[in-house]
Image 1 (tube, helix red, strand yellow):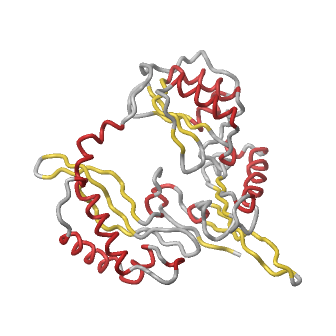
Image 2 (tube, helix red, strand yellow):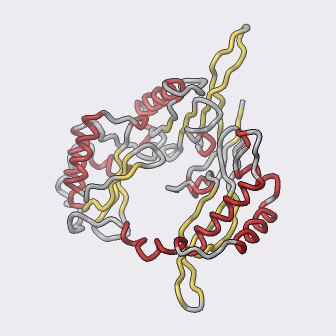
Image 3 (cartoon, rainbow, N blue to C red):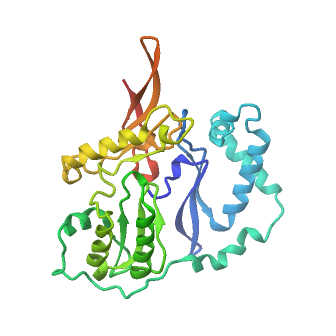
Amino acid sequence: PCGLVTLHDVGAIAKTKVVDGAEKRGFAFYVGGGLGSVPYKAKLFDEFLPEEELLPISQAISRVFARLGEKRNRARARLKFLIASLGIDEFRRLVLEERQKLDSDPRWTAYLSSVNENTEEALKPGTGLNGSDRPEGFDAWYATNVYRQRQPGYVAVTVTLPLGDASADQMRALADIARRFVKDTLRTTVEQNFLFRWVSEADVPEFYKAIKAIGLGAADSATIVDVTSCPGTDTCKLGIASSRGLARELRLRLGEKSLELDEAVKDLRIKVSGCFNSCGQHHIADIGFYGINRNVKGFQVPHFQVILGGKFHDNAGEYGVAIG
């Protein structure tokens, strides 16, 4: 679910297709997604869009939106509202019609010849895990934070950042860890964590020791304890409630009960936003919260609205509904 395709204005999922006996690269192409106060799940535009059509179709979409999109109300100047108004079939017709008007541009495909140059390479040979070297806490951490890659002997490792926070000293240490175990590269995730790819499995125990020494050895990645939150009232002028405060308390209480180990609930996702704009992605959480104001004895008092039933997996496969 890394790209969360269904919640974006334009989203693409890489796929291949055999055409005339040859394998072609392309994308399942989606349009019109968005969260915020009025969430819309993106609609399928094309089951297979050839890679050479990705940029021209995107340009055609931009032109249609520039011509027909909302001009007066900035809050509704989103592709999702235009598609909701026109319908996906009419929108698709307009885009394909616009595509035919575009003059060919070599820049549309110039990047394809070098696309594989952006792939990462391993620093060390991929070798298996030595079963005898298992530091305290390693097995629990390995179960939640380590994922096998397609390439034998290599794993991807998630370093959990509680509430997405890391100190300057921790960041410097993580840079050193990246130099030591991978080729200087780490990635951020939509769950506010760091991901190290191409770690030789034999190095994982030493990797764990290194991150545990800087206070980032939590064994709870992608579990109910790994709560995502926007900044909320800490720094955001739109914030209504303290999303980070709630997320911090939830993380503390759930961790105390070791729910990241409970098979019944460990895979649930909790996400918190300080207002209805859904920067914390509460709509796609199993359990979501967002800040609202309610009148209590004549005073506006911050509350949290509860959202249930969202689905983070399958590229944000389902949006939750408000209860209470």
